[in-house]
Length: 425
View 1: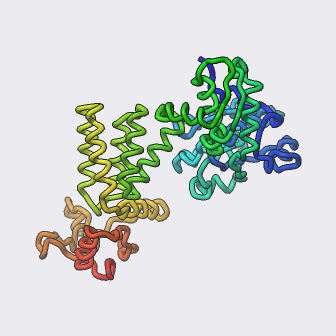
View 2 (view 1 turned 135 degrees about the vertical axis):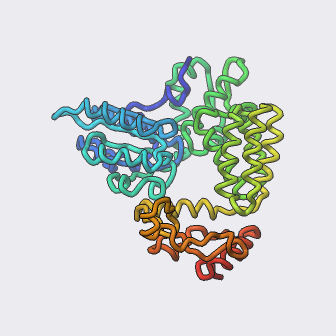
View 3 (view 1 turned 90 degrees about the vertical axis):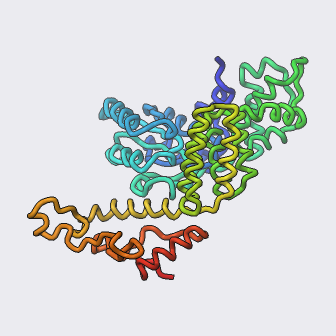
């Protein structure tokens, strides 16, 4: 099977690289770094399709460094350790450090990023990360402090035109068709500054245009062909993440119309319906929570129902659930509560359980005060007491703070009745 055009046209040297002149142009910073033979760890931050992966591989090849590549989408800690072990085995006194390139590094969890630290500090590997998200928020501080950050810019019109002309002139497959570009506008608009999307669109137009000899690319032709193929959604690639992200964010924003649109795109594109259902379960807990506790029940029932009956009928249940979630009031109070509690435990450690909450199955434990002062809630009216259950040093702490919605206003009143100042107004 032929490689996609974007792969066939991937530059192998900086002479072929288009764009990012502020980084790789004459006397630009990456150009200077490459010429020294030394290479610090760094992160390439920029939008999709602007050449982050290509730039990393060119730099490694230019400095004759072994190149290992991982994608954070489908790699875990074990994969990282395997690569680090391979890098160690290639270490020689005169050889440069291997490059470990991690695409979508912002998708790595904290533990996955932690597993990189030692190898980067010891110089076992030189890390090059690529991210479309702000590394200040997505990369752990310890790793970020050991890396420089270089910002890549969206490709400009002149870059995209140059890429089209180069592909039509140099690609062995496209050269089989005589092509004239009457207008670049539609191809450039479809790309959105993403070189990969540009090449995908160009290849699609050339391959699907009527075979009548000479091909003239017009804006109308591009619009027609792209529209006919727009729902051929790549469920294994970047679009998989783009559309599920748009779906989730539309429900979070209480927009039922965008919600069903992105749901339709994913269903038509062949996305796994149970994957979509699982994401709705997570959203019901993370973004709706106690503002509407029934949302979690409905999302879970949707998963079970779609699992039992399958598609295409499952689309009806998924649509009902997605619209219900979109129209539900939103609260992330419980999500924030558990994350704040986890952060506290990680920083301070697990504090001893207060004696009055401990079981006292032996005489000695009773003599030591285990269970002493425990207040059995059902002996009090209305089934609650004001017995403090947190360790003494954090007894004033409130991890859970009710959200600003009708359901949690009632919880605020209830908790204020019991805990007074901790849930004061």
